[in-house]
Image 1: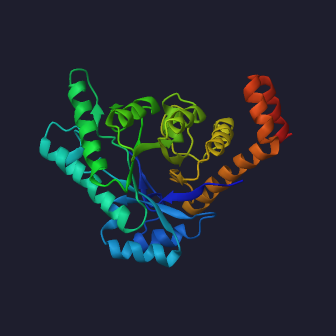
Image 2 (image 1 turned 120 degrees about the vertical axis):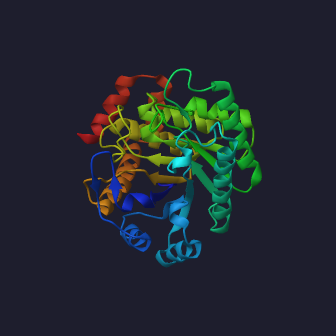
Length: 320
C-alpha cells in the first residue's frame, strides 16, 4: 500500500550539463512546470532557492495552476563563485553569514508556500588536500551555521543531505552516520536528514540500513530516489541497477511508517525527462508491489530467522 508522496526536482526538466556536453530541452520556468504536469504519479516539485524563486508570486501561481505542491525548498549554497571554497565552513565569516542567510531565506519561502521544509546538500563544504582545513574548526562552523538557521524558525524542518564527494573531494557530511552525528550534536528537533539513495550507495551503505539508522533516531525527514553503479553519482532510475536494494528499502520505509516525499533525483541527460521521471514513479510502485506479492509477514519471518537463502528464493520466485 502506497503511503508516500511522489515529487520531482524541477531543475532536471530543463537543460542539463556535464563536463563534456549539454543535454535535454531548454525550458523556462513555465515550460518546466508544463513538462512536470505530464509525469505519471507526480504530486509535488522540489524547487531550488534561489533559481526557481526569482519571482515567488509566479512560482506560486504555477504550482496552483498545475495542482502541484512544493515538496521541499532545496537551498543551493554551492553553485555561486563565492561559495566555491566553502559556504558554511568558509574561512571568510562574511561568506558564512551569507550561507546562513540563504538557509533562512529558503525557510521563509517554504513557510509562505506551505511546505515548511528545506533541504541542503553542502557540497562546497569539505576539503581536497591534506593540511587545507582545520577539521575541528570547520566542524564547529558547520554546526553553528546549521544550528543558527534551524533555530530561526522552529516551524520549518531543515534536512541535511549527505554525499561522499563532488565537487569537493571530501564533503563534510559524507555518510548517514556523520550526518546523524551533526543532527544530534546540534540537538534541535527540526534538524534531520535527506537520504539520497544514490549517495548512500556511493558511500558503501545499504539504503535500507541507512534509512533504518536515521528513522530509528527520528531523523529521516526526506528521501531522494535514484540509482548508480556505486562508483559515481550517476542519478539513474531507481532499481535499474540495484534492484534488491530498492525492494528492501521500500519494505523498510513502510515498516517505519514513512509518509513523506519520495523525490526523483534522476538526471535524464540523454533520455526524455518526462518519460524518465514517469519510469521512476513506476519503479517505486513496482518495488512496493514486489514486497506485497511476497507478503510482509513472510519478509518479517525471513528477517527474524536471518536466512538470506530464503530471502533470495522469495525474491526470485516473484520474477519466475
